[in-house]
Length: 307
Image 1: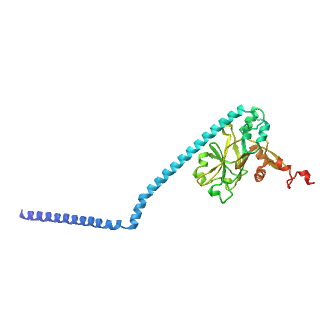
Image 2: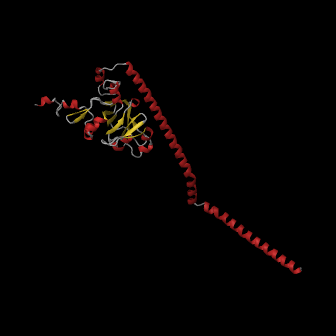
Protein backbone atom coordinates (compact mmCIF):
# COMPACT_ATOMS: atom_id res chain seq x y z
CA UNK A 1 0.00 0.00 0.00
CA UNK A 2 2.86 2.35 0.74
CA UNK A 3 4.28 1.66 -2.69
CA UNK A 4 0.96 2.45 -4.37
CA UNK A 5 0.61 5.74 -2.46
CA UNK A 6 4.11 6.86 -3.50
CA UNK A 7 3.37 6.02 -7.14
CA UNK A 8 0.13 7.98 -7.08
CA UNK A 9 1.87 11.00 -5.55
CA UNK A 10 4.60 10.94 -8.19
CA UNK A 11 2.02 10.67 -10.99
CA UNK A 12 0.03 13.55 -9.63
CA UNK A 13 3.12 15.80 -9.50
CA UNK A 14 4.01 14.82 -13.04
CA UNK A 15 0.58 15.74 -14.34
CA UNK A 16 0.68 19.01 -12.42
CA UNK A 17 4.07 19.79 -13.90
CA UNK A 18 2.86 19.17 -17.42
CA UNK A 19 -0.13 21.43 -16.88
CA UNK A 20 2.06 24.21 -15.50
CA UNK A 21 4.50 23.85 -18.36
CA UNK A 22 1.72 24.07 -20.96
CA UNK A 23 0.22 27.11 -19.26
CA UNK A 24 3.60 28.83 -19.28
CA UNK A 25 3.98 28.27 -23.02
CA UNK A 26 0.50 29.72 -23.63
CA UNK A 27 1.22 32.83 -21.53
CA UNK A 28 4.51 33.42 -23.35
CA UNK A 29 2.78 33.17 -26.74
CA UNK A 30 0.12 35.66 -25.70
CA UNK A 31 2.75 38.10 -24.40
CA UNK A 32 4.76 37.79 -27.63
CA UNK A 33 1.72 38.59 -29.74
CA UNK A 34 0.79 41.50 -27.48
CA UNK A 35 4.28 43.02 -27.80
CA UNK A 36 4.42 42.39 -31.54
CA UNK A 37 1.06 43.99 -32.41
CA UNK A 38 2.00 47.61 -31.54
CA UNK A 39 5.15 47.31 -33.62
CA UNK A 40 3.15 46.04 -36.61
CA UNK A 41 0.40 48.63 -36.19
CA UNK A 42 2.83 51.50 -36.17
CA UNK A 43 3.91 50.76 -39.76
CA UNK A 44 2.78 53.52 -42.21
CA UNK A 45 2.11 50.92 -44.89
CA UNK A 46 -0.17 49.00 -42.55
CA UNK A 47 -2.03 52.17 -41.57
CA UNK A 48 -2.53 53.14 -45.22
CA UNK A 49 -3.74 49.67 -46.11
CA UNK A 50 -6.20 49.63 -43.23
CA UNK A 51 -7.46 53.11 -44.12
CA UNK A 52 -7.94 52.04 -47.73
CA UNK A 53 -10.11 49.13 -46.70
CA UNK A 54 -12.14 51.47 -44.50
CA UNK A 55 -12.54 54.34 -47.03
CA UNK A 56 -13.14 52.21 -50.15
CA UNK A 57 -16.70 51.07 -49.40
CA UNK A 58 -17.55 54.48 -47.99
CA UNK A 59 -16.46 56.28 -51.19
CA UNK A 60 -18.29 53.76 -53.34
CA UNK A 61 -21.48 54.30 -51.35
CA UNK A 62 -21.12 58.10 -51.68
CA UNK A 63 -20.68 57.78 -55.47
CA UNK A 64 -23.73 55.54 -55.72
CA UNK A 65 -25.85 58.03 -53.78
CA UNK A 66 -24.61 60.89 -55.96
CA UNK A 67 -25.42 59.05 -59.20
CA UNK A 68 -28.85 58.20 -57.84
CA UNK A 69 -29.54 61.86 -57.07
CA UNK A 70 -28.40 62.93 -60.55
CA UNK A 71 -30.55 60.30 -62.22
CA UNK A 72 -33.56 61.37 -60.17
CA UNK A 73 -33.02 65.04 -61.07
CA UNK A 74 -32.66 64.14 -64.76
CA UNK A 75 -35.85 62.09 -64.64
CA UNK A 76 -37.77 64.94 -63.00
CA UNK A 77 -36.46 67.37 -65.60
CA UNK A 78 -37.55 65.13 -68.48
CA UNK A 79 -41.00 64.64 -66.96
CA UNK A 80 -41.44 68.39 -66.52
CA UNK A 81 -40.36 69.05 -70.12
CA UNK A 82 -42.73 66.40 -71.49
CA UNK A 83 -45.61 67.89 -69.51
CA UNK A 84 -44.76 71.36 -70.78
CA UNK A 85 -44.70 70.14 -74.39
CA UNK A 86 -48.05 68.43 -73.88
CA UNK A 87 -49.66 71.63 -72.58
CA UNK A 88 -48.18 73.69 -75.41
CA UNK A 89 -49.42 71.17 -77.98
CA UNK A 90 -52.94 71.23 -76.55
CA UNK A 91 -52.93 75.02 -76.55
CA UNK A 92 -51.72 75.14 -80.16
CA UNK A 93 -54.35 72.61 -81.26
CA UNK A 94 -57.00 74.78 -79.63
CA UNK A 95 -55.77 77.79 -81.61
CA UNK A 96 -55.89 75.78 -84.85
CA UNK A 97 -59.59 75.08 -84.35
CA UNK A 98 -60.37 78.75 -83.59
CA UNK A 99 -58.14 80.65 -86.03
CA UNK A 100 -58.21 80.15 -89.82
CA UNK A 101 -54.87 80.00 -91.56
CA UNK A 102 -54.94 81.06 -95.20
CA UNK A 103 -52.22 80.73 -97.84
CA UNK A 104 -51.27 84.41 -97.47
CA UNK A 105 -50.59 84.03 -93.75
CA UNK A 106 -48.56 80.91 -94.37
CA UNK A 107 -46.52 82.57 -97.10
CA UNK A 108 -45.81 85.64 -94.95
CA UNK A 109 -44.50 83.43 -92.18
CA UNK A 110 -41.82 82.21 -94.55
CA UNK A 111 -39.08 80.00 -93.20
CA UNK A 112 -38.27 81.97 -90.06
CA UNK A 113 -39.98 79.69 -87.53
CA UNK A 114 -42.71 77.19 -86.97
CA UNK A 115 -45.61 79.62 -86.94
CA UNK A 116 -46.42 78.52 -90.50
CA UNK A 117 -47.22 75.12 -89.06
CA UNK A 118 -50.12 76.28 -86.92
CA UNK A 119 -52.14 74.11 -89.33
CA UNK A 120 -49.99 71.51 -91.13
CA UNK A 121 -50.36 71.71 -94.90
CA UNK A 122 -51.79 68.36 -96.01
CA UNK A 123 -53.92 67.19 -98.91
CA UNK A 124 -57.68 67.69 -98.59
CA UNK A 125 -59.81 64.95 -97.16
CA UNK A 126 -59.60 63.07 -93.86
CA UNK A 127 -58.11 59.93 -95.38
CA UNK A 128 -55.28 61.77 -97.13
CA UNK A 129 -54.63 63.84 -94.02
CA UNK A 130 -54.42 60.70 -91.90
CA UNK A 131 -52.06 59.13 -94.42
CA UNK A 132 -49.71 62.12 -94.33
CA UNK A 133 -49.71 62.57 -90.54
CA UNK A 134 -49.10 58.89 -89.74
CA UNK A 135 -46.28 58.28 -92.17
CA UNK A 136 -42.55 58.05 -91.67
CA UNK A 137 -40.26 60.88 -92.68
CA UNK A 138 -36.58 61.42 -93.30
CA UNK A 139 -35.51 64.33 -91.09
CA UNK A 140 -32.74 66.44 -92.61
CA UNK A 141 -31.15 68.61 -89.90
CA UNK A 142 -28.68 71.45 -90.34
CA UNK A 143 -27.58 72.67 -86.89
CA UNK A 144 -25.29 75.44 -85.76
CA UNK A 145 -22.62 74.17 -83.34
CA UNK A 146 -23.31 74.89 -79.68
CA UNK A 147 -21.71 77.70 -77.72
CA UNK A 148 -20.78 75.71 -74.62
CA UNK A 149 -17.20 75.63 -73.42
CA UNK A 150 -16.62 72.19 -74.99
CA UNK A 151 -17.64 73.58 -78.42
CA UNK A 152 -15.78 76.86 -78.18
CA UNK A 153 -12.75 75.76 -80.21
CA UNK A 154 -14.43 73.27 -82.57
CA UNK A 155 -17.19 73.81 -85.10
CA UNK A 156 -18.83 70.42 -84.70
CA UNK A 157 -21.97 69.05 -83.12
CA UNK A 158 -23.40 65.77 -81.81
CA UNK A 159 -27.01 66.06 -83.03
CA UNK A 160 -29.88 63.79 -82.08
CA UNK A 161 -33.62 64.48 -82.33
CA UNK A 162 -36.37 63.73 -79.82
CA UNK A 163 -40.14 63.52 -80.24
CA UNK A 164 -41.41 63.83 -76.67
CA UNK A 165 -40.43 60.58 -74.90
CA UNK A 166 -38.65 59.00 -77.87
CA UNK A 167 -35.34 59.98 -79.41
CA UNK A 168 -33.62 59.00 -82.65
CA UNK A 169 -29.92 58.61 -83.34
CA UNK A 170 -28.73 58.88 -86.92
CA UNK A 171 -27.43 55.76 -88.67
CA UNK A 172 -26.47 57.38 -91.97
CA UNK A 173 -28.33 58.52 -95.08
CA UNK A 174 -29.26 54.94 -96.04
CA UNK A 175 -30.12 53.26 -92.73
CA UNK A 176 -33.10 53.73 -90.44
CA UNK A 177 -32.38 55.93 -87.42
CA UNK A 178 -31.98 54.11 -84.11
CA UNK A 179 -34.93 54.69 -81.77
CA UNK A 180 -34.54 54.62 -78.00
CA UNK A 181 -36.30 56.04 -74.93
CA UNK A 182 -35.57 59.67 -74.16
CA UNK A 183 -34.04 58.93 -70.75
CA UNK A 184 -31.60 56.46 -72.25
CA UNK A 185 -30.66 58.67 -75.23
CA UNK A 186 -29.91 61.64 -72.96
CA UNK A 187 -28.51 59.56 -70.11
CA UNK A 188 -24.84 59.05 -69.23
CA UNK A 189 -24.61 55.58 -70.79
CA UNK A 190 -25.32 56.90 -74.29
CA UNK A 191 -23.54 60.24 -73.79
CA UNK A 192 -20.31 58.39 -72.94
CA UNK A 193 -20.68 55.53 -75.46
CA UNK A 194 -22.36 55.65 -78.87
CA UNK A 195 -23.34 59.33 -78.50
CA UNK A 196 -24.78 60.66 -81.80
CA UNK A 197 -23.98 57.54 -83.82
CA UNK A 198 -23.39 58.29 -87.52
CA UNK A 199 -24.07 62.00 -86.82
CA UNK A 200 -21.08 62.32 -84.49
CA UNK A 201 -19.12 65.52 -85.20
CA UNK A 202 -21.59 66.36 -88.01
CA UNK A 203 -23.69 69.54 -87.69
CA UNK A 204 -25.65 68.39 -90.78
CA UNK A 205 -27.19 64.94 -90.61
CA UNK A 206 -29.99 62.67 -91.86
CA UNK A 207 -32.39 60.70 -89.65
CA UNK A 208 -34.19 58.13 -91.80
CA UNK A 209 -37.61 56.58 -91.23
CA UNK A 210 -38.76 58.64 -88.23
CA UNK A 211 -42.43 57.87 -87.46
CA UNK A 212 -44.92 60.71 -87.06
CA UNK A 213 -48.28 60.62 -85.34
CA UNK A 214 -50.69 63.25 -83.98
CA UNK A 215 -49.54 62.56 -80.41
CA UNK A 216 -45.91 63.23 -81.36
CA UNK A 217 -46.14 66.46 -83.31
CA UNK A 218 -43.25 68.26 -81.58
CA UNK A 219 -39.58 67.74 -82.37
CA UNK A 220 -36.60 68.99 -80.35
CA UNK A 221 -32.98 68.72 -81.52
CA UNK A 222 -30.16 68.18 -79.02
CA UNK A 223 -26.43 68.70 -79.27
CA UNK A 224 -25.08 66.00 -76.97
CA UNK A 225 -22.44 66.98 -74.44
CA UNK A 226 -20.41 64.86 -72.05
CA UNK A 227 -22.30 66.05 -68.96
CA UNK A 228 -24.85 68.68 -70.06
CA UNK A 229 -26.64 68.77 -73.41
CA UNK A 230 -27.36 71.79 -75.60
CA UNK A 231 -31.15 71.75 -75.90
CA UNK A 232 -32.59 73.52 -78.93
CA UNK A 233 -36.03 75.06 -79.20
CA UNK A 234 -38.82 72.51 -79.90
CA UNK A 235 -40.96 73.03 -83.00
CA UNK A 236 -44.24 71.69 -84.34
CA UNK A 237 -43.67 69.34 -87.26
CA UNK A 238 -45.53 67.73 -90.15
CA UNK A 239 -44.42 65.92 -93.28
CA UNK A 240 -43.72 68.25 -96.20
CA UNK A 241 -45.87 67.33 -99.24
CA UNK A 242 -44.02 69.81 -101.50
CA UNK A 243 -40.78 67.80 -101.74
CA UNK A 244 -39.78 67.08 -105.34
CA UNK A 245 -36.75 66.70 -107.61
CA UNK A 246 -35.75 69.79 -109.59
CA UNK A 247 -32.77 69.76 -111.97
CA UNK A 248 -31.55 66.47 -110.48
CA UNK A 249 -31.66 67.93 -106.99
CA UNK A 250 -34.10 67.47 -104.16
CA UNK A 251 -36.13 70.44 -103.04
CA UNK A 252 -38.71 71.04 -100.28
CA UNK A 253 -40.45 74.41 -100.00
CA UNK A 254 -41.64 74.20 -96.40
CA UNK A 255 -38.53 74.05 -94.30
CA UNK A 256 -38.90 74.42 -90.54
CA UNK A 257 -36.45 76.78 -88.87
CA UNK A 258 -35.49 77.28 -85.26
CA UNK A 259 -33.21 80.00 -83.91
CA UNK A 260 -30.09 77.94 -84.67
CA UNK A 261 -31.13 75.05 -86.89
CA UNK A 262 -33.14 74.17 -89.99
CA UNK A 263 -35.22 71.07 -90.82
CA UNK A 264 -36.67 69.29 -93.81
CA UNK A 265 -39.26 66.59 -93.11
CA UNK A 266 -39.14 64.54 -96.30
CA UNK A 267 -41.74 61.76 -96.67
CA UNK A 268 -39.85 58.49 -96.37
CA UNK A 269 -41.38 57.11 -99.56
CA UNK A 270 -40.01 60.10 -101.48
CA UNK A 271 -36.64 59.84 -99.71
CA UNK A 272 -36.30 56.24 -100.91
CA UNK A 273 -36.95 57.31 -104.49
CA UNK A 274 -34.57 60.26 -104.25
CA UNK A 275 -31.74 58.19 -102.77
CA UNK A 276 -29.01 58.97 -100.27
CA UNK A 277 -26.97 61.01 -102.77
CA UNK A 278 -29.69 63.64 -103.21
CA UNK A 279 -30.29 63.72 -99.45
CA UNK A 280 -26.62 64.53 -98.85
CA UNK A 281 -26.66 67.16 -101.60
CA UNK A 282 -29.65 68.84 -99.97
CA UNK A 283 -27.79 68.98 -96.65
CA UNK A 284 -24.70 70.39 -98.36
CA UNK A 285 -26.83 73.16 -99.90
CA UNK A 286 -28.05 74.24 -96.47
CA UNK A 287 -31.60 72.95 -97.08
CA UNK A 288 -32.44 75.77 -99.46
CA UNK A 289 -35.24 75.25 -102.01
CA UNK A 290 -33.95 74.62 -105.52
CA UNK A 291 -36.81 76.72 -106.90
CA UNK A 292 -35.09 79.90 -105.74
CA UNK A 293 -31.59 78.77 -106.65
CA UNK A 294 -32.60 77.76 -110.19
CA UNK A 295 -33.79 81.30 -111.00
CA UNK A 296 -30.29 82.69 -110.49
CA UNK A 297 -27.09 81.98 -112.30
CA UNK A 298 -23.76 81.47 -110.59
CA UNK A 299 -23.12 85.21 -110.76
CA UNK A 300 -26.28 85.89 -108.76
CA UNK A 301 -28.15 87.38 -111.77
CA UNK A 302 -31.23 85.89 -113.44
CA UNK A 303 -30.27 83.22 -115.95
CA UNK A 304 -31.62 85.18 -118.98
CA UNK A 305 -29.32 88.13 -118.15
CA UNK A 306 -26.17 86.16 -118.77
CA UNK A 307 -26.68 86.07 -122.59
